[in-house]
Image (cartoon, rainbow, N blue to C red; front, side, top):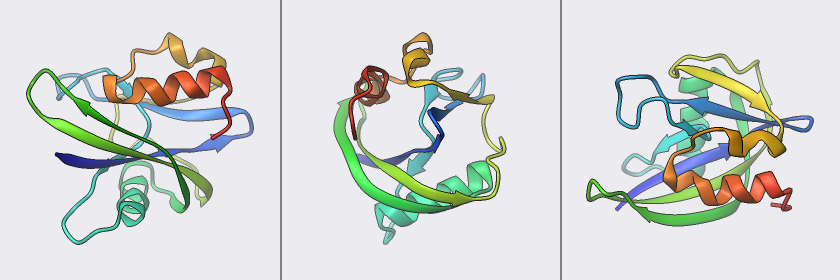
Length: 130
């Protein structure tokens, strides 16, 4: 099982979503930013590192708000931990994606998200408190 973290970054009523690069694994699918936990790394430190690498921000990681295990048809399973990002410094810039977009929760279902993200995306789109 692959342990993965993802962050929920907000700007007022908008949420930051990221589109994977064309030609890569799951090309052009949308996701919440984050990445794989490395050996001897806590999930919170992983997310902090990934947000710095992918978006150029320094983030304060808040509580875990959702988790799920998902088995992809290709035969691997991920355990995805979603965290609220309490604050960050810097302006998110696209360093690793096809596109990044700030969007309202009620438009999230208009995007083609990775399967493992769809449960939390549906909760965010409904306006569930996390």
